[in-house]
Image (cartoon, rainbow, N blue to C red; front, side, top):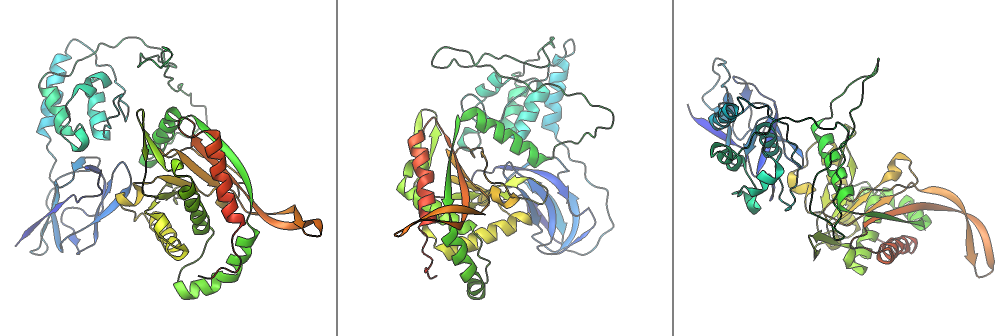
Length: 444
């Protein structure tokens, strides 16, 4: 009877750990090769991990909500056949237990104050959910966390690093003091004019009779944190342009059936719009940038993220890598594949990383226009409004006339730290120009 170790696989270039969210099999259950075994979540995406062997699950080394490092053994499968269902193995975490005991002894005469630790520190370091959770429980402030020398990728602080810090007496227990419930003012690095930044805490909201209290799911919490961070990071400005897309509507209607027969893919408007955006990015490469401190990173790759609504109502942004190297057929295949995998929870962490510009189609919900929030660390995002039949003035060699045209609004939000109104406005106008100049006689 052989025993096979199932390890947490590498899930992307910057992904070093994942959280066990749900075991699809219990100890004693028979597992087929490539059958989903466990669901895990990273900071980027949720995934089902398939079994690497056929047999019986005899041991689970981690339970729900445990955080696991890439490469660690999470389960053992016996290939010797069915066995009696044993008692699940409890996950022992002596390092965490020892650290908590040490802190508890120090806190014998003091009450530990809850310490709120953000996702990113003043230095720009990223702190994983596990590290933030331990810091909060043990009363470690952000300033203390910033002093810990990280051994992870890009000097990231790992679970081992913070536990070593605690065991070496680094955690300082704070005595609870009365604090305002609604607003907290923290001393931060002064701005260029010497003013001290003010951080606001959301007010507590009372429950009324008949109200239903629902906890945010994990993905909604991540989205909320990311959106607030983006608005805090970038001063948003939005420019609007109305585009006449009559030629595109008529061309797509004419070509979509033959396109499906030839390519076995449905031709939507999205790849056509992305094609125009990519052309405009090549004309205005300073839209395809990121900000790092006081430096600007000019991206060579054009990787377009497309915001996709999930059945749960949440939003995810899979990325079309090197979109400038794809023709319309290639873009269509990528758009359809990523959208399908998103709806079926089959995206990998790599599928949603590396974007340099994002597109969101608010017209899908019948919205005419929107004010999208920048997907950090990008500096711009475009919202595509609904296509509507509108009366419009048509200029002809024989004079002006009124006709029915298909029109839509493009909303371009950009980071005003590095994208001025001229560049932001010219870019969205160029996208509209490419859409309006679409060749109705174009062949695939």
